[in-house]
Length: 257
Ligand code: 3PY
Ligand code: MG
Image 1 (cartoon, helix red, strand yellow):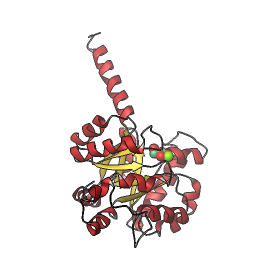
Image 2 (cartoon, rainbow, N blue to C red):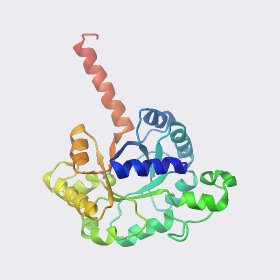
Image 3 (tube, helix red, strand yellow):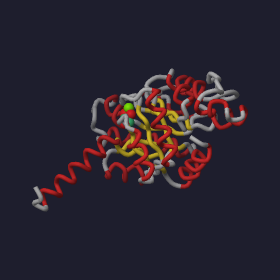
């Protein structure tokens, strides 16, 4: 993603919040539609989606056409530099539970001096070498680094994780967190909400940006009111499913079918 878009994203998140869906479909048209609908970011999902690095290139191109920031949730650390190479505006890494793991993420995602990302200036993000070298490295180091805290171990190690330089957003994964607390899927269970609230408060005290996943208007409001700035809302396929159900119900009410 061009630097301008990342800067706009930072401006917006620092002054309020940003919102965007996870994307699992392999058709870049959905990414474009999300952008034209005014979403701030999309999270292209390699952890729980079928996309490959090859197909993601077109999702990222679509995001750039429609002016929405393409973040990629990777499936493994080895994907981090590969998705940045194809132009991801940020990486989101699941199941980080210690400072050591958070440092490993930064090492993979950043060039010198913050990290040791493997260097190639002929990649898509460097416009296949058309970008001046130093300008490419400067832009590349602005990509967002987001880590997911989604287990009890992450909570135990929260203080040390929050000290790791180079992390832009702490993202709470309520589904995996609920599983680690013994109530899988119960993302509004009091034990889950209490742990999430604690992370939000401790991060905010340190002026660290926080994100989470919501899949209902109620949870969206709950966490937006709590001051979560990076609000991921549902998943393209789920949003489409809900829209279909709504249309079907409306049609029934109208006696149209
Ligand atoms: C989780 O809730 O565990 C996530 O990773 C975000 O959906
Ligand atoms: Mg998760």
